[in-house]
Length: 373
Image 1 (cartoon, one colour):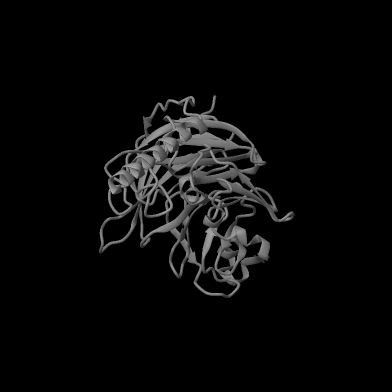
Image 2 (cartoon, rainbow, N blue to C red):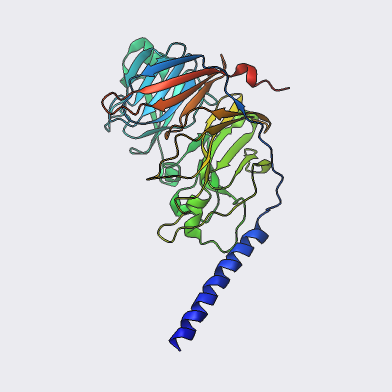
């Protein structure tokens, strides 16, 4: 009797996995058109710089004549460099609750799309405020307390505090969902005037997957350019990049391999650690959107195979694939930025020397390789 019960349970388990598998095949377009990638190597390196940044940093972006790094540190959270020679100009930003302090800041956008008058816009999650830093005023006066203005979030806007957040206009934002919103959509468009969140449906639609898995399963990199009427999303676990208009209507889809459902973990609510990761980061300039693709799984403790080449895909904001590059280095930080003015790509590589922490900046001239016919 016990043997028959065990046998019955095993048969039911096999049926469950078969039903889940066929549900995936039936519920997503597995016959998608595959976009071939004609990968080329980056041009010869233009320059290499060393900057004495310790540990990891959150973001790097180009604003006017500056390259700006936003760090994890308790003090000097913002480092400003001359983008031509990477000479340090200034550091500021300390931990604390004063109006001019920056306890937990994340840029509202990775590039200069929404930057005005050399101001940097941040989401300060610890004090629940949006903060604007007037960079010109700070560099001319040197008094950071006079250069930061804040706007308090109300209770309904707390939804904007965590995750990647990008400005669409004065009252609309696009952001990845928080874990408590799993099951509602891949990302949201939030209107602070109407206090409404529009959730963008999952791609692909997979039946039979518990909501608790969807937060990580559909996680990815998100960016937007309201002047180009474009929102773009690259998935970590599905090999695609999707272009939407700023109302959240899908405009273009790029698939680079057949859709494959990653195995889901029985120990936590997400794909297993050995799952292949695709898009790990994005960077938006005023002209282009860049995607960092690993196309590999982790090998140990969340780290990737540093000897395996990665890729950089470049799109125009209307969804045209402009070029695709093999990257010569693979940093676990996946940090890079691009300067539209002179056409330079900056790749950041963390030093592996324990007694000499620093960052190596690799500079490439990409302008001639990003011509749109």
